[in-house]
Length: 150
Image 1 (cartoon, rainbow, N blue to C red):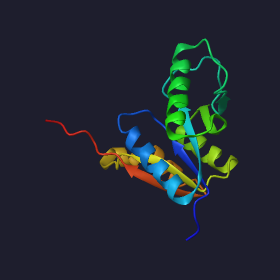
Image 2 (image 1 turned 180 degrees about the vertical axis):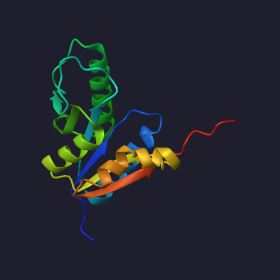
Image 3 (image 1 turned 30 degrees about the vertical axis):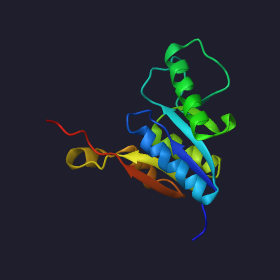
Image 4 (image 1 turned 60 degrees about the vertical axis):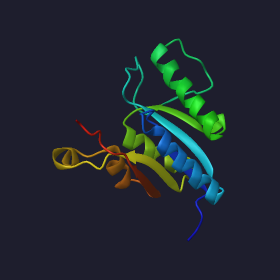
């Protein structure tokens, strides 16, 4: 098996994000791979911004929601030892932007979280499923357990 050289970790800043990040960091260490970190902004409104727009990580914004996301990405990157030049903020559809960036930076492994959907949710698809069917590189989907209701 050929070692992975460049791992792209997708960040959603959920409560399970630390587990996913730790596994990606462990893989990068085992393979001696470079790691890049991507946050696709699809859950905050972005005024006058077209999908597929790269948001500079090193340029502060006056937009509070964007600044919050930028700050979280920079903090996670620092925690994982990812160089700031390998941090990416992109406004768009997650599966599209993940696949596009992975190709652009020549990532050979993408790490995402997956809820393991069932029923109607499975039919509607997920980010992990969309990436799986469109990427040219390997994909590792870290299973995120669904919340247990009591």
